[in-house]
Length: 555
Image (cartoon, rainbow, N blue to C red):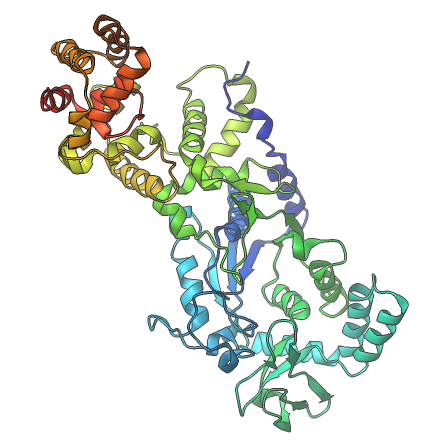
């Protein structure tokens, strides 16, 4: 029987399948693209796409292929709404590109740059190194301007494609109205040179500044601004244009010759925006377009995340409470067509699972020979920088949760010493190897942050400098007899966790206390509440001398 935890959850065949599909393109340089609109704080679910792209790149490179990843910041998208907490007035900025909206915090050149960089700044810790492309800069380049020209020259073809893909589920009346509206539709909008808007209105009532006429011979564009009413006919090269989003996407594929792009289920559904883009690629740009890799969304605590409503769990929040390789592991071990529901309250258990898996990779535990291929594939891809040559022992996360809360009472030096002893004991080693101590200090910080943000009442402990007066005065004669007995039990130089645990039961019986009451008495003296961590290990964490002194202070 395999020791791989929850092996029924592992479904990594998708990695091989996707890479095989990409290899069929047989191109000199493979480019795997991703992208996101910086409409506010970008949630961690968006990293699933980047991790998928990174894994494809790594697998291609391992096969000797030239491959790289790209992240496109769609900061040329217009503002439709602001998420909660943004102080900028929506009425003033709605309809303007994110790249033109100021950063209310004053630390970046624009609203879009601020939120995109908050996301990008976490990439290296997750092992991601895509080339960054800013859409507002891309539209200034000749390659994109040529793509815009090609789209305008092929407006009739694009109209046909839009009717085919957008209206395929409409009833007859809706379809007729849509076809009528497309007779004057052009695939691009204008950033008004007078007021700077791409469109008027907010989410639900948006009217774009669409081109109303395009002269193919003179390349002149006629438009009307829906925000300020300005109208004009101007040379295409003298205007800031933006392709509508279903056309903007394949235009970027064409410019960069994107080999593959993952996409969330909202875009990847049959007949959706991705399929529209593939058809535009074929009939307008004359090539096949990228390999489509659909994936399901990531939920936090059973809820979909959405920037617009402020339901966001940020990548930097994850890094403050858990290791990045754990998140990569969660993204990779699950089939792309399954929703991943991340429960932050389960991070200690998930860390345990990942570190058991890690030990199997390094052959430190038995029973995984039948799953060797899975382990050899998944573990190196989960690690941000690939697998290390040698195993580095880790401090168990649950142990770190407790010890991180004892720093105020024991001091950091003592906590570090106890943690080092715990690593040596668990891994049967005499000294801490290089790299283990820095990982240990990071884990203590993450564990402390985790318990403060996501821990339950039973995870939190509070050791006061002195035993509260209400605890001291409530102790009975039997309670004191039991506590005196525990002082004697803890006198030997060394006593194991299990020996302490057994001694609590025996001393309780000797003192005429029920076992339950004995535990309550000890917990109240140590942490001022009726429950707490497993007593044997907790007493050794605190240190026998400290515990004896604590008990004697109430006798």
